Length: 438
Image 1: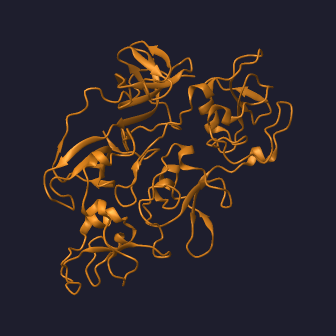
Image 2: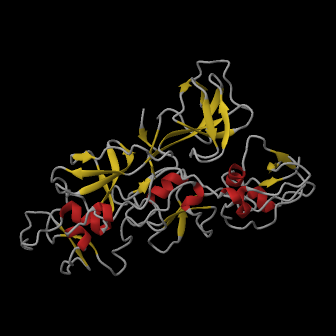
Image 3: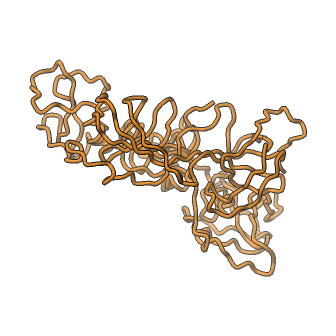
């Protein structure tokens, strides 16, 4: 069963579809940056500072620096553990390697250095606040918590100010460890930083915006105030011969204010060039849906399955990344995440409908769920919900090897990686011999 993804994905749409590009961005570092000198004391691995006074304890299930970094709250990691200290080091008593030496951005600096094994845990490390969603109130009360937005994905969906999907229309939201702390960059928690889907808070700042024809009924209940120029034009640009006194037709104009005259539309909208000269900005997009509605990923109970065929396991969802292992058929594994990637596909619109004109060139970018897909049209993002009819070009004979569905699998020996188009049997507790990897 497929439904809109509710964890880390999403394509940016401020208006409907400008939030394209969803879900879970895989943080990749050049291979050269990942090669670290290994001291004679032993190979590097992840360590956790026990809260029971046991010092630094090896975490064999965290098999690469990125997983360790995501949990660390003490030395510049993302802090997804909500306060735990983690390090990537060659021994329990060795200093942790800097996260930026692996190509990972160092987040807010710790208030105190992570302690050595024999030292007491500082109060800052014990009580570090977990990240949560904050909203910038519009009555000068500053940043206030939004406990109703329970994860970074929901917070990102509402944010209109720093690269979120903009579903609030104009609200500023951040994912941070405190009201006065800087928000974590959305891409640091696996979400895409999106171009502004609209001119946010445009009622408060000077600049052009989308306005309804004076006196006309608004079928979109005010949402036009947050449309960008492309969406304003597509949804109902007033014709050149429109009588401003005729309120029987609802149309929209691009203007400097609600009472200002209409500005000329951009040339790319009124006289579009072939899309081949303004191709989509990316070569591949992540689909904004998850594979199932009755299982979760990441911090959730094991999602056990058995491989139905030999399954190559890669370091990242990219067959060009290092091959970690080939899982034999019949092995019990834990499915920890899912991603699906699409490459842009060119098409020609066959009918004039909903702002699209017959003959328009359009690119399919990725699937949003509920019959909607993200598209690139006249040099900007737009949203298509099943119409108009489009004649798509044949798919490439040599498609992008990253395209397709990927499962992140965890093996019993702790190996964790990505399998493309994996042939697996979902168990749902039907196989008592299949247990969660330790």
